[in-house]
Image (cartoon, rainbow, N blue to C red; front, side, top):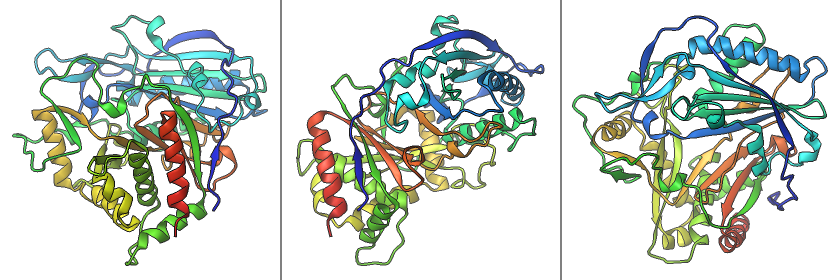
Length: 446
């Protein structure tokens, strides 16, 4: 098999970044002052998402020219994406979180690095120094005036550059952020929007009265919501963690699909077999207790699950966490096809009624996704396919934090071609050693 593990490289610790200009970007036209309703999905994900998009040098687009075009494009984008220039606000009457579309603006930062892109090494490897390529606005604005979008353009000595976004997850999920990037790229090229955004979050409002028709074992219930609380899978760990990038080639994925057939010829998707494989390895890498239950969480796009489906340009969060649960003994001894089937059942559980039940539950109880591992896939979001005037990104990635219960899936295009995927894992050293052993053992077993 072509499976491999990227050894921990000697990472550049300091990108030697200098901030040259920090400014507030306002909509290029006057926008309506209003409050944007946030769904029960939006209001749970109140944390920021940091992403970095790397570009090779382009002789026709200097970093200075890119900065000018991006700044103008962002100003124009904030007209339709008016909520992105707003601020989170708690409605004193309803006690609901909402966005005050007050046109206070987004933040635009121009910076430079004394490094060359080639000095950074393998962009696919999670480097904490990438945090230098995104900008936190606490030092620039008041704590009560934090923007929902910050864009930092950092040029490198070689002429390449990076676009670093910090966006509130309340504003976008991965798919709607991809649409935003497509539209930003179109504006930078003096073209119309690729997709007109639909900002109506009422499409995912709870029913009246709420009807919770399923038990929702994937959620932990909170009777009150302390400020800033996050679920266990989102919490950063204080433990010492080892990072690994494990690779699965297309041949490996095909092999997993063959194993998944079992006694049937049922078709298994690449995502389902990869998720089942990761689940078994993660559960069995912890201290072994055959009776311990392991729950895996994974994101499901609900846009097409609803009746009627959401509009293509829906700009809010339309992803929920599906789940599968089994004991460690079942994960160790069951046929691989059965594990894949459980993952498949988790996704298929997301019917229109199930989704509406989750949303309604958020009206009755505050809660968060609850499990011991979350698989977060950037594999097919398509950030790397966005066509800017200066070309497509060389690589796109989040700024990786120490979260041992989140495993990330990425396309491998940034590390030697389009063949397969990269799996980013962070675990305590002993668990990492066990995880790697199981990863290869189960993959290569007959």
